[in-house]
Length: 417
Ligand code: PMP
Image (cartoon, rainbow, N blue to C red):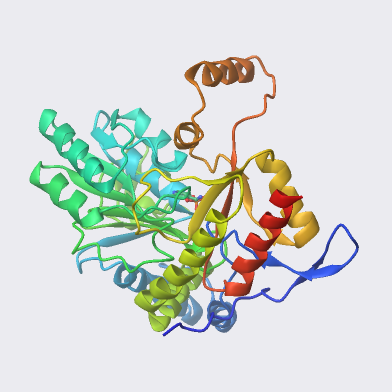
């Protein structure tokens, strides 16, 4: 049974196209940011008259705000299946959550990761002792190379994506978690792309730390979370008020998590909205969402695969478990120009470029090493060479079969013209 599309704000907008006609805006860019669910906005509107400073305010509104803020942590923890003793730190987004975790871990932490990660789950680990696994062609091969690397040297943290933002491939988290724990390592999961599409169970999947973003989960921009199996210790990313127990002129006693990592006035409305989104998604049911999206994804992939000259990018070609993200190239069409045509002529919103995953895109597009070197040199010299890129279509709660058919129909027209 397919759940009806949830009501998303702005989903009936019409936009002018190059031929002067108004067309319904077709959003196929959910992987970047999702529209806000109206159920989330209702909660925000009801909360706004009550919002006030949190924690040490004694006014009635401060108490309401503090209770709402603290309750939001419980809702997010429940949404990702975190244990009772876990801690939820509110941040701006996944990028901040990963930087926060990386800063909290002792310098020299031995991190094992993969080359397919979003830059947010790659660059923050470079301040530590980072080893990167080779590219793999199947989930089984990923498990094999991970086990080999964990056996070969001591690793403290395995840092992987939950679902690729380029290929949509969903990673075998439970097996990776078991492997990591069997070798004394913790598992961190970048769940920015996984969380909107699949139920997450941190306990069943042996996940020690998990990051996610509200703006990819039908809440407005500005809220994200780092969920840790046990309260995090270590160096806070931000230093300031609210994160301390006592400050003297030459010392500081940091508070425990989560306060330790939330210096400054927090985004209380953001946290409330984020929690409201988690609750709304739970109410629809993550399994029902996954089933509906699997059907839409299958239609999208089949439609794309039927277009002459179109190549769909996949790291694991026979892997079926994917969230609704498809990146592709079309022979004879540059990615940027193709994305622009889809918008200008058909009012279809997609994304183009490298999707913050340069090493993966370089691999998928088979960019020769010499070309990569040439681009690096040119960029260092201040030039602006054209970077390799693809087009990405991604689906979500508001996507209909008409949206998918609009895209595949437009691409077939462009390819055939
Ligand atoms: N990881 C993945 C897999 C992503 O897709 C994204 C967003 N594109 C991020 C991390 C970063 O998320 P944010 O921009 O919300 O920090």
